[in-house]
Length: 280
Image 1 (cartoon, helix red, strand yellow):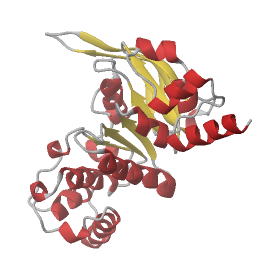
Image 2 (image 1 turned 180 degrees about the horizontal axis):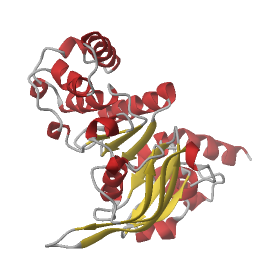
Image 3 (image 1 turned 60 degrees about the horizontal axis):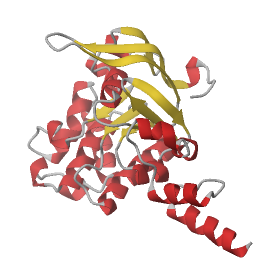
Image 4 (image 1 turned 135 degrees about the vertical axis):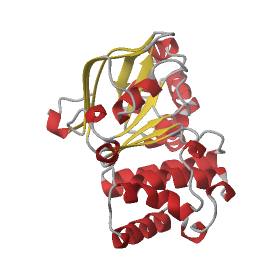
């Protein structure tokens, strides 16, 4: 990705491989090389089975690499105890219901801090701060499954970020939500990235959101990194994207047809580029 030194990197992978064990041995990652600087907002994209979730789970420490080097927040996170890992990297699953198991919204958010040994005063202050920030404070006494899908997604994120991880991985945060709700979730991730300097890695199939929010795109195909770079650069590589069954956002496709330079990747950029073309 960049020439950043290891100390400046959130993720450093070299020759990374992961093989799922018997009875169905599958080599899911094949020599992945990746460098993600601290504070980046990156999107991991690719068709089903491309290796993006396996990569994310190796980065999170849930999976132990089979071969190669993987350092996350300058350590091999899979060697750490869960409590130690929680302050370095947090993982929000595609289905938030898989992470919610307490009787109250408040309890789900407090659980991680309790396991970290935080004091009651620290827990009270941190949980209230996070719930207010994510607009869940008024719902703190509800059972999590009384919440809407969007609120449960925010709650799952709240339960992770309350532990202040350096890196946040969010797997398909917009699944099952309309575009307005999807942008609310992405806006939240953007604020965490901007305000707290948290490194964000999100897995998504929605290229319009990638174009709007991500500053770097990692394209996975057949267990390897096929492309990585800024969205504008990645979306211009049509032939390589076709290999990975990824289609650029509609405005980028229009820009390619019209030969617009620089390539627009959002609607406002396309509008401005076309107006400039018409005024010439």
